[in-house]
Length: 290
Length: 90
Image (cartoon, chains in turn yellow, blue):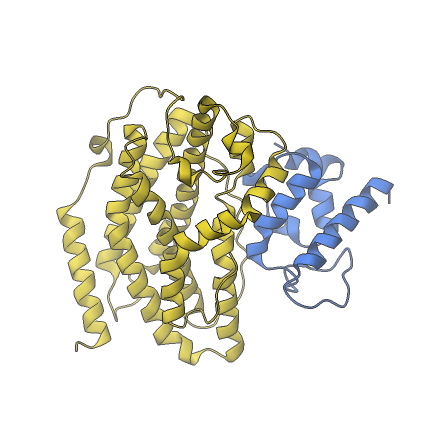
């Protein structure tokens, strides 16, 4: 068996080669219609955050489709905010460590994330005239050695694993308008490499640093990850979406939508592979409450 | 303190106690809720939703500063009191 660092380097080299082979021009890859017909599907109905609720089922088809447009704008907005933070963190990690040397792949990662933001940003700006604002704030604090780096890559992995399930489904959903299908499909193609890298990097950092952390730090890291999962999911239930789709009493609607057992089961099903990975690698030692 | 201010601060206190990250002996209006890890940074998003629900309007998120969430007093000043309310609303 190859030593961990050697295996890591071999994977990074392979991912670099695929990124080079699949290099794409974001301005040539997609056909952008001047305007969009809002009475079409933009988000798979089953993934709409209110799907299955009486408040959703009783809407006329036209309004369901309008809601699907705003859900797509929210999903793409979440990706923009997630990727802005990602690019910042990836840039910080460039040439930070030589063992293993991940910088060759970080250049591709940065390039690809920037392209994704071009897709998402253009869709939101051109067709919705806005990007929904980010409700997350970051607060500076002290970290143990390796803790900040580990948490950064672990959060990226969790965020992207959830997004990718949605991308995969909507990238193959022929009910959606072509531009929505294509953005999801292209994102999924690049993300499959990012996910492979994310798991490798996160696990490597955990194995490298966790044995040196105090019991308190380790428990804090696990608690943070456990809380991070539901905080990612919260953003899929956005009052701005409901308001823009013309629905009443949006805050109460959001609470009801999030609290339903069906919604919890959906979140669990979408996150299952990611949670299992975190449990298998001991990054988590108990199930998060979704 | 006006009746409205007392009512809002009580609602904030109740929310924070209900969502506290660690056991609390009590909470004052000037308790540093983030610095003292009463709530975590991840819970701020939920707190923002609660503030929006209580104030019945959208908050101007891009202009938010972490210092707005230091304590019940600072939350009240930023989102509910005169000038702060106008600044924080969309």
